[in-house]
Length: 285
Image 1: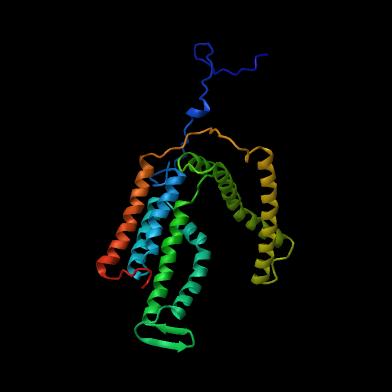
Image 2: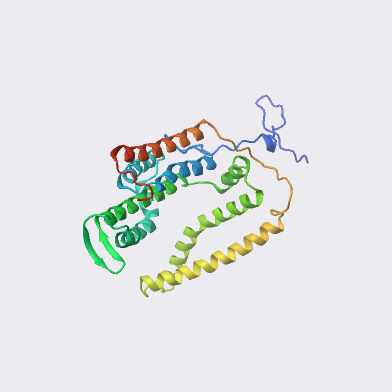
């Protein structure tokens, strides 16, 4: 019996199947319906665009540049077809951390202007309140682009890009891919733990007790899975020295450069508007 599979020919003849060699296979991400700025973009380009857009925001702590950056974030969310419901759901930890960051800046920020309250090291003034608002808006302008740009990023595509485009060491790339893959499983594990506790009647002890128990259980699951993954990767030679080969080609295309250009433009406009209006403050000074 012939084990070679040949495609059917309309004239009754058989033709050998065409096999693309590994070095000629190019990584082509799947596209979604309609226009999406992130369609077909390289993961390295996404990370670079995120760094280009958010890094300049750390130069100045002011309301104007942060507000303009938030406006560009909304625009990027629309261009990248990020659902508002998903964006707000993933931003719940950010909203929880916002008041704490703003409160610390309001109480201990550099005093300047009208004084409203003073007790020991605590001094609430006009400048500290403005800095608190600027810090809170800036956190939104830095965190939400990360949710938008890193959304639905494939770990295998990330590894190809880091190794072939960014030219990073193999050990770092393999570790980054493994960590990214484990990170994507945390949400599933958290939901599974919640359903398991509810089915056993363990979810009626209060929110704090439930969160503590689930957090500890998730930590145990993560440590066990990480240990097994490290052992499996070492057994399969992932940490062996030498030059590794790649099954797919990863390179930058025009859409990748467009994404980075738009991110650079948004960052430049945000800082430029702050400078033009006189609100630019280098590190809040």
